[in-house]
Amino acid sequence: MSTNVIAMHGVTKRYGSDVTALDDVTFALEENHIHGLLGRNGAGKTTAMQILTAQNFASSGRAEIFGEQPYENAPVLARTCFIRESLKYPDSYTVGHALRAAATVYPHWDQAFADQLVEEFALPRTRRAKKLSRGQVSAVGVIIGLASRAPLTFFDEPYLGLDAVARQLFYDRLLADYAEHPRTVVLSTHLIDEVSDLIEHVVLIDGGRILIDSDAEDLRGSAVTVTGPVEAVERFAGGHVELHREQMGGFLRVTLSGAASEPTPPELQFEPVSLQQLVVRTTQQNSAARADRKVLS
Image (cartoon, rainbow, N blue to C red; front, side, top):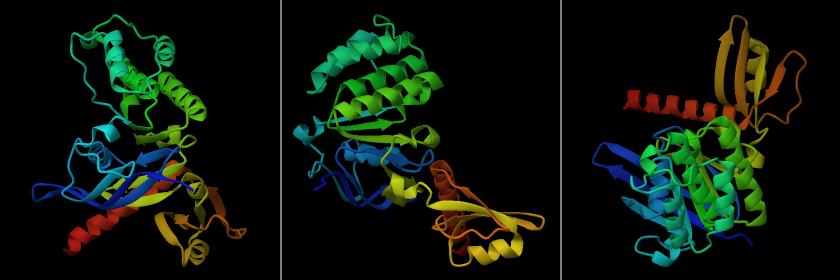
């Protein structure tokens, strides 16, 4: 029987009277999976993770990790690791200092793994934090997140400062170590194509609301782009959820959810929709709906 490590129940977070970062958010994430928390910058991803790690407070609703509220709960928080892109270290700290400090915080810390990663990311162990490049600071963060072996690890886009080769190294080491030491990992990112083969579950958030909460396997191939003569496409599209459309003269191109497994009329062209395309189209549809609501109000 699966166990939920993370649960949010109707969580809302407001800043003042005019900014709602999270709006009645409800979702649950099972243990020992790699989850993708996807969405644009400012969608609410970081706020959700801050609330789950007791670094922010919900205005209403309830957030739980390991079945308990995280606030003032040291035993629960000791089982979590939250690595974010904006992580800062004291100027006097070297790479070695940062890793030794992390070793005192995380009970499952693997020093040998950390040393291996330092070599693979080519980090200067004795260089001070203030002299590290953005990519090197990012590498320190992902090394701590991986070597912590925390039962629940959040990565809030700390790998953005890494170049493509270093990001691939991170993904490879994460997947290999996860296979040997299963744990719950939450990847917050907008680099969806890069992580689409890693993540097993997807939560898409936009404008503080959950748009998708589904197994990644169910999403892959769940939508299709149909191109052809306008009338033929309109006939086929009827009754389906339309995510996007664009017309080019007498031809129409639409992205449809839930039509991938249907028979394909010969006059139409069908293209599978990638996870990134599905996220982009779903987000665009939501943005258009939000704009319409504002006009009507």
